[in-house]
Image (cartoon, rainbow, N blue to C red; front, side, top):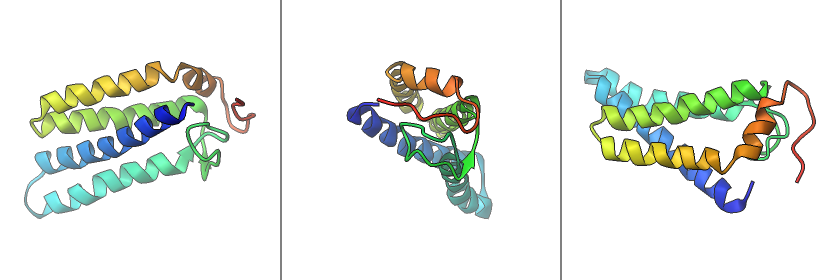
Length: 129
């Protein structure tokens, strides 16, 4: 994966966490709001970092908890989708649409990684090149 696409991906990951935090704030009230503001994005970040495919070129290649490629892709889509939804729920539809468009563009530019992920079960060879 090209360096600029990795940088885009990192920015999208951070934006997704921000969107999740904003959505959690928007749908909760009182003291629960503060807990949701911290726990929702923290939980998403932990899931993002722990459940991986060995050899994923967009990551370190290590997997604290190894999952098949389709599961990893699903986790990514849920978190990115949650970011889009969070921006929308916090009454920022323009940001939600723009963020969603950037996520789609990232995945369109990462077709080789998607194919690789969908062909991976646990403990297969890393993507070369």
